[in-house]
Amino acid sequence: GQNIDQPTEMTATEGAIVQINCTYQTSGFNGLFWYQQHAGEAPTFLSYNVLDGLEEKGRFSSFLSRSKGYSYLLLKELQMKDSASYLCAVLDSNYQLIWGAGTKLIIKP
Amino acid sequence: ETGVTQTPRHLVMGMTNKKSLKCEQHLGHNAMYWYKQSAKKPLELMFVYNFKEQTENNSVPSRFSPECPNSSHLFLHLHTLQPEDSALYLCASSQDGTGTGELFFGEGSRLTVL
Image 1 (cartoon, rainbow over the protein chains, first blue to last red):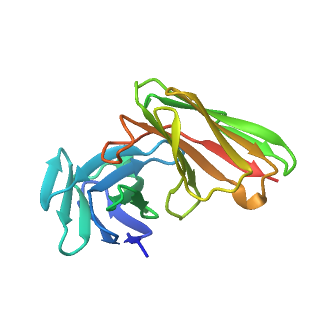
Image 2 (tube, chains in turn brown, orange):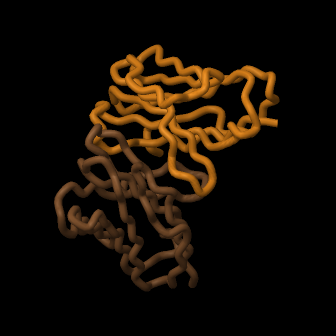
């Protein structure tokens, strides 16, 4: 079966750095997405990785290793507004999105 | 504001009621989706429409009935639901239905079935 694993919950301190991991076992791979979802709001797109390596976008970076079936989302200079759930999703060989259950990130002052 | 609007935001219904969820996108996209989101579970894809044609039905029970009259509007008709159908129903759109593009989500309709 297809599976996406990410931690259920993480806690970090304002101003610090946090890394949210995502591992996947899917039938093929056509890219990996990260979405952010604040409580009671719509998920919003953060990043899309299809090649190995690190992509930086402001305070957020996303890393992909296809050989290891692994990605992480790196958040720097954490702000209180970064408290949200972070969803990892993989596009499989049939171009179906396989979703993880999400990681709830709690930022403390 | 994501460009995708869902109504109602909250809905409480009995098991014998009939209700509908509405989704409208103002982005000029050609693909629209219904997802079910339950606490601590992955998003579950329910239906996909591409250019108004249904291209995906993920073994969804017939008590959920989608309708897509045009590329901008999507409905989910609900009847004789079960308490386990209580969840957040998210609508999304994308430029096309290939899966490679970014999804734009609405804020969801929180459904409670009594």
